[in-house]
Structures are given as structure tokens and as C-alpha cells.
Length: 331
Image (cartoon, rainbow, N blue to C red):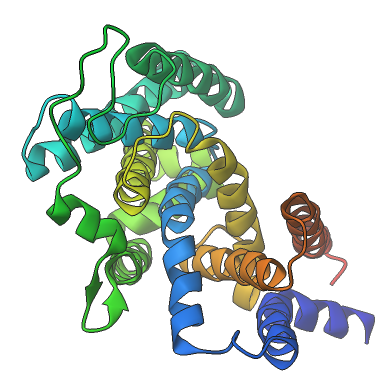
């Protein structure tokens, strides 16, 4: 009986909590369950979901990417500077941050795969390096339209309308970031579930030695996972700049923990018991609904972190307790 309850809680607990939270806010807040507010929630989680997808990919290969937050920050300021400082066209503004994300992923992979530094330590070091780089690049200032330099001159450029459309626009009444989010989740889910390389990523993360003996190029798989992680974080940074219309030097700092929380909440969605992009999406939805509802209830903002922390620790407790019992044969 106890095992059945635990199994049921593990399989459907996250979804029950999500729908329970939505039901609670819908009954207590008159404007919560409206199309405008629900799309606002999805728009608000779009950036953190892109970052969380990157973390998910690194976790699938039994790694962990702590540098995604600083990758978001450097991508945001680079995209902003390319428009405001150098007046570059849209495709350059998007491609260069993505390339920077890929380079950061390569650096992570080099330290982890080649030098054999543990994932947490390597990505922690890279996080500090990248954080220092983008602050040096901007001299510690945020970037905005026609910003004034220290010598009194003004930057020549502004954020273009086409770039801002990525973060603020709508298509057929649906916010563009939400459309991009749905496409990304669907594509990554199909890739991980139905492609050979996606399955190789799970095999590599499950047992690296067994994967190597079965002919999988483990180093290549892990390297590509970190490159993808960096590029998803970089695209999150581009969306961030497009949404707020400026380049903020600390944009990615709070996103790291929210992304990690979304990924670990996603472990228990539908009883997956492993990192998966659909679960990550629902984890981000849960966090977005909580923040939105608490804001509408005028709960002080610093209380949000406490509640998000409680949600994360509950999800982790259920997930890892169930996995421990499963692996030890106690179920």
C-alpha cells in the first residue's frame, strides 16, 4: 500500500501539484485564469525554459552545466552591443551570441572530457571566467538605446523593431517567445526520443563504460551535449535582450537556479525518473505559475525564492527517495 502511494505520488505528483496550484490561484484571484494571464506565464517562462533545456541535455549525459547563467548574461550584452554599439544586422546579432554559447560549451567539454575535471568544478570555473569576461567587455555597465559612454559620446544604434519582436511580438495572438518555446520543446523531445543520437545520450549518461563498450563515442556525445547546452543558454540570453530591450550584465544569475529547479521537478513528471525535456517544461510551468500567482497576491518578492526552494526540495525528496528504493529493490 505504501509503495503504491509512493509510486502514484512519484508518477503524478508534479502534475497534481501544478493543476492544484492553478486551481488555487484561479479560485482566489479573479483574473488569474484568463488567456492574457496564462500567455503571460508562458511568455515569462520561455527564457528560463531555454536555459533549462541546456541543463537537461548536460544532465542526460551525467554531467551538470553551471555556466548557463553566465552564458545568458554574456549573450545578452553581446547581442545588445552588436546593435547599440556597432549597428549590426539582425542575423549577426543572433548568430554571434549562439557561436559564443557554442564556444563556451566547447571549453566546458575540453575541461571535462579531455582534462577530466569533474563537471561541477569545470563549469563553475568557466562560469566565473565568462562572468568576468562580459563585465570586462561592458566595463560593468548595462547596454541600452543610445547609451552614453564615459567620454561623453553616445552610442550610435538602437534595438531594432525586428529584434524586439522576438521577445515582445505576437503571431496570431500568441506571443512569439511562446511559439519558439513550444517548437524547441517539441524538437528536443523528438530528438531525444526518436533519434539514434538522442538514445546514445541517455545510454552514455546511464553507464559510460557500457556505452563505450557498445561502440558509442562517449567523448563526442558528451562534447556535443555541452555545446548544445551553451547554445540553448545563449538563445535564452538573446530572448532576454529582445524582451526587455537592453543588455543587463547580471541577467543570467537568477535564471541558473530557476532552470535547475525546473529540470529536477521534471524528473518526477509522469514518473520519468530521469532528465527529460517535457518534464523540464512542466517544471518551468510550475515555477512560472507560482511566481505569477504570488505576485498577483502581492506577496513580497523575496518570499518567492523561499517558496521556490520549498517546491524544489519537495520534488527532489520525492524523486530521489523513490529512485533509491527502486534501485535498492525495496519497491
